[in-house]
Image (tube, rainbow, N blue to C red; front, side):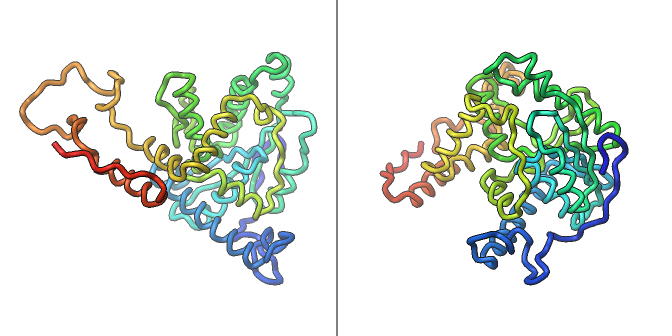
Length: 336
């Protein structure tokens, strides 16, 4: 273990920890009040789904290349544990060779169990570094009681992690934001920032020196929560911004969960829309040259179909009606 020096190498782990008596994943084999084989089946199914989704996101956005050293930011929450677990598995299976290094920022908040993460990482054989930086007292001193701590906390944390990435020679910085995080950011920007903007799956840091990736971009929060339970990760509760009940992000999260309960498929549809922007049918003059548009008499790929029925939307509405028989179906609009 290291707490500020060079990264220490650990033996390679080639599979999930197993219960030697029955060959089941350790967390599933010991889960109380559950059929161990059923729990093992669920854990394996979830593992495969998360591995597939992470692999697809990594491939779609070219997140990891051969020879990369990936610094995984580990907070002790379910999302960062899941990210580390999946990347550690993919490291031994992916067609490209890359390193995984876990980095935790100990912000010195009261009650933080400093021994939990080192003990877990040592048991998994994962190389890691614990960085001690008292950002907690800075945030508490600067932000008035009851104020939102996220902005300052994030800036301080980001600066420390960028410095550590340079020190250990990391070529990529992996964060544990999932699908709902991206959607919540989109709606926060839409409602309060007047922007169509979200967390991108991949970006360059503001100083231009680091590439930040979000391999969990396609993963659902509920899957990560269930996976953390089945894998029995030693979760460390957040006593900083994650504990503030009045945060707009928390309220947006409640809105998304309510939609998921009442309108299954709506979240999936909105998320897919983030990857299908049509600049010619928005209003941003920086993305599309509206000023030079002229009628040429020849068909245009992105031409207006405002008077026509969009086949994709029609198909989606029909599918929703099939899934909810009580919905009143309207007759199709006449084609012009």
